[in-house]
Amino acid sequence: MSYKTTCPYCGVGCGIEINRSGSKLKLIGDKNSPVNQGMLCIKGQTLLETVGTDNQRLLQPSIGTWAETIQAIADKFKHTKKDEIALYVSGQMLMEDLYIAKKFADSYGIKNLESNSRLCMYSTVEANKRAYGADIVPVSYDDIYSAETIFIIGSNTADCHPIVFNHIKKSKAFVVCVDVYETITAKQSDLFIQVEQGRDLELINDLPNQVWFSDKKVLSVYSQGLTQSTDATDKVNSLINAHILTGNINKPGCGVLSLTGQCNAMGGREIGTKTKDITATEFFSTNQIKTLWVMSTNPAHSMINYRQFDTLIVSDFTQTLTTKDADIILPACPWSEKSGHLKNSERRYLKQQAFLPPAGNSKPDWQIICLVAKALGLSGFDFEHADEVWQEMNIDESWSPQIQVREELVVIDPSNRVYKNNVKNNARLLTHWHGMTRTGKSQTLNKMTQKNPQMQSIHHITNTEFFKDKKVELDKYSKQPCFKG
Ligand code: SF4
Image (tube, rainbow, N blue to C red; front, top):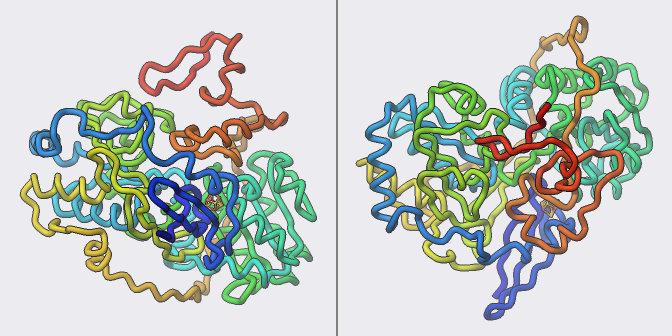
């Protein structure tokens, strides 16, 4: 039997074909996918090493049967003030999961619903709203092949979004790369411009004066190097302004493309998983939230101010640092065991199709949320299949990248900004993904992981050697290494 599905890692959204014969599985890139035309990076190629069960897989609710566990959560919610409850969801969840999470939060009156994609993408959302009047992505991957110049800034595309970089290398465009250090992407570009940390805003403002920008059809590509930096919203806004000023917009080969980190970060952005009260970082940095339900993400690993909550509920498919802290653990299905939709960096809807049955007693996230909603007496959560959720979402899949450009641009002034030099930058590895809860299961990826001599890893899993001679202890709550003395 053959299944068409989508790689669950990055926002490129590569199509995959799985052939299953009994217990034997074979994976290839989907040649008919408009995204990757059969190409897959090493993470996509090794996905089958990460599916199924191992001794870290979560198979049962942690405190009894499903009915007992759901009732315990409902009781906890009933005894907590609504503004002290938060749902922390993830760009790993499918559209159907996120829609149900939002519907539940709205129906029950929970204002604090946020996605982990807040950390990487909200500067782009705000910049788009400022520049276009709405959060719009006015380009597609096809523009790579019509562009004359591809301007890459704050993105090691070759390592982090490899199949997009394959397209870039296959195009005939002149590739300009701006970064603070010479990445693989920089080495493979036609022109590398090294900037001091924080000085990229001046360079972006000067783009209309560069011949390779102003007189060419330009596609700009960026990711977290821009969106997670100081003044990120201004930088993205300024980049869009440079395109508007040079007429590099609304034409084939022209525009601004933000490469999204997670497979469905874009979907969450569209569904509106954005708090009406405090932000995701404030869930952790303030004491307001008493009951936190974390779904498909690992804040104990990734949130710098991670703290303990009165009640921590975690839905995930595998043990993580966060599940170690949890009061209630709910076994959720991973990508291979659930079906639904996601949306990639170019805002294309893609399908994920289950090719394995749910292991143990695990369930898709949308089903788990529906059970809690019903236990709280809410109506409108009687779905049998993900298809029914999708139908209720009633999404218009027709897609037009044309945008209305505002007549008056928001002026971005680069003067009087405070920059810090010698701040360590973080990076993503070609062979691993986020906290490695999935890629760490692949022997091939683990063997292939090489240290870049320019990089100094401070990751507690990948660099135990680095910590060997240092005074390092694990933080009490986050379990992350912290230096002493
Ligand atoms: S580029 Fe991204 S979506 Fe494509 S195979 Fe690699 S990790 Fe998966």
